[in-house]
Image 1 (cartoon, rainbow, N blue to C red):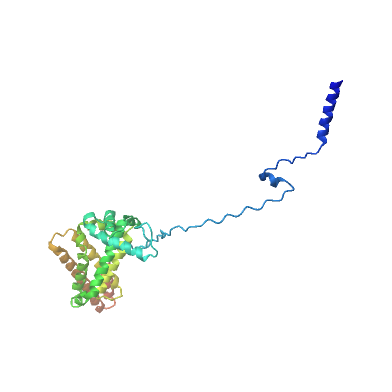
Image 2: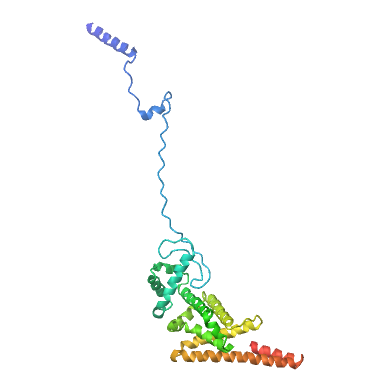
Length: 308
């Protein structure tokens, strides 16, 4: 009985303890979960971090490239392929290219009209050989630069006083003198000139080559005092262009001292051509005196003969 009462007393005490309020505060909730409570206020927003300082990259000139026509460059390139960086403005880089091409000519007698000569020329003027890659038609650019440079030298000599000396000569002598002056500029490169002719005859280069030769022949006629604009303008330039090209090829096989045979060939070719033109004009004048009938028919025959 005593044990029963003791057990009942223990049960009563346990039941009373369940009904009493909890006096100890609950453990605090983690701070990271406070925002889940409906009674808790939202935490203040996180501060915005300061912007990171920005550093502008080092400026490098652009690698723009715009191709055009011209020698040596008869095109226009972007700046600074030589040094990795490229300077602003096109003129400075074009001058740099011209310096490389001009220096490359010194290596042509040994290396030919080649990329190797251009690389050697770039090194001579303290330019990176990478600039050679900026020339779309490397060997052709070197040949075309030489052609343009020779034409400029010829005109400079005429303006510097050679023109006054030409006035005292006959037309055939003036033309022969000018053609000789131009061909003499090729003598340092005569052993490599067949390669230059081969480069000029390539399909990608023949158009520029023909234009350069047409300009050369036209300038020679102007320097010789021709200012006509009639139909003879085309005939004169065609005839002189043929004589120049034939003399250029003849010069490659000339073993005479100082190309004496070539200059004789030039003189004879120009004289014969002008004498033929003079004879043609004399015959044409004669036909006009014979009347409109038979004279007109003879004129037509002569025109067909000389056109062929």
